[in-house]
Image (cartoon, rainbow, N blue to C red; front, top):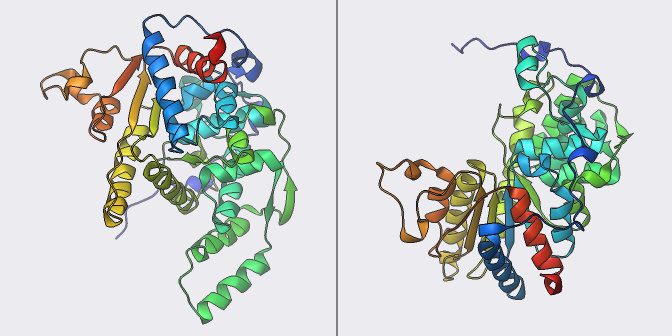
Length: 374
């Protein structure tokens, strides 16, 4: 006998325009052309990081930037977008919140809500457009073999989404049932048909106007054919509050993105760079599994394991020198997942930059984009 389940299909949602959002994009955005903050003690490790990125790109190795939502909420999207356009960063990876804030800033020019107040009255995350457009975008994207990040980037870049007709999907499913073949998109077709019938989605092309598409890092990545992958957890993000949310849709999209991420990790080789900014759990946990996948496949090709240079930026004060290995389990530093896990995935010494991500990313931008003025 199965356990009782809450009827989440009964959740009431409101237009996102009714939400009192904390920040306008114009209030937080950082101009990439502005002088960066004083780097202080971080100046040397940031310079070393920039040099390793140059080495990686000269070797055509990956430069992967993993980040949490605060990179977006701190207005660093345009700074990172510059680095993407110029080819300094070859892969972006974030969690579900990172792409949600990115999309909300693009859609309505503002994001972030009062969690304490809105949880109390049941309105936290219960915003129609954020959940509904994520669902329709991912369901149609997966059908085309696109993952979470690419689908959202395409939505913003193209300003809308194409939904095939229910009859087309039924015909595809019927044909497959009569002559089944290996086709991982067939489940996506069933998901999409279910979503159309559940949510009364319009079929064909739907315009989805974005007030500030230039604010979207996902759209920049899509336009530049730079992978942006999203690595969510079911229930972690506000999109799962929506009554139409289907875990299978998010799971299929995230599954594609994990494989895309594994490819970029494989492409790190011996010269690549991994940068983790404000991602205490997602980045180290996903990276260590992707590194294992990459090394497994590399061993079958008789190729050496990856040996990337890894730089981690967070606010936690540094109490242990990770260049000398792990601390004992009796030391609290042992339980800093974003340092321990990364340190276990490369033979290179781990570089930890304890400080504000705006200081790190803006100074890194200057060193890479304007080396003559550095």
